[in-house]
Length: 305
Image 1 (cartoon, helix red, strand yellow):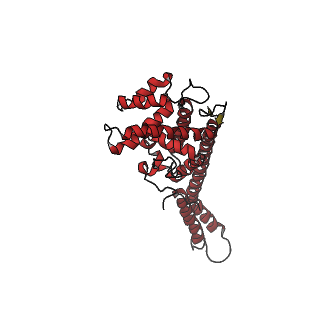
Image 2 (cartoon, helix red, strand yellow):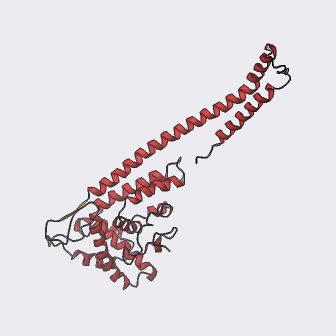
Image 3 (cartoon, one colour):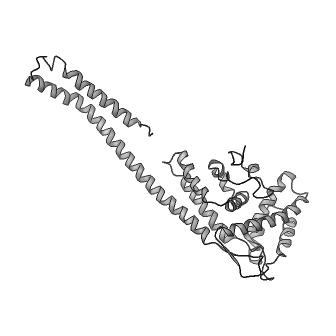
């Protein structure tokens, strides 16, 4: 049930006062001699009194109701405009996914994945990279033991994102400049030796910057648009972001998680992941070796007991 606003309450009180005055003074001796016969003079005085005293009270009540009606209409128009843009952004998001195409690197045939299936392949590639990186990082004494998992995630994702081809090498090395150069080159050199099944001259990990860069920028824009809409309550903001969240497959959520732990740190810097529980539907073991609750524990996950 919709709560009354202050304007409606004041209008209701003023109307009640006005009606009460009309009734009370209708039986006052100054305007009613009690004979049961209408006295034109008393009736005229009564009309003047009502117009002069009660009229302004009821006029103010009417003004407040008109103001409230305009406010409701304006808010309704704002919501309509917001929803039009929001659902357009949601449609663009679905279109982005549907238009994704990736040639399967492990098949000798001319085989391609489309749409959501691309994220299945991206996750598979990340797991392979994660294993290679983790094996080397676990043996590295230059990285603190408590930071090794995060380092393995970040390095693996950045290689997944940029790829190890010669053309992407400069950008990749620049993004990994915070890590030991020898360690980074060892991992990249090992990954570079892995080639596709369809062409031994093409690297297996060619990168997904074109796909994922556009995908996550648009997704961030959508959440930011909802979060920055001032006339929405936090409850309604959560409702709209939840609609976006339900559009994501488990594989998209998995890649989103590791993106947020590497180059996508702005997600939690803005508080979006915790505020809107963006990974609450991701199983604890979906990315083997990476428990989302280790990094985001400000909300209850679906698998929490």
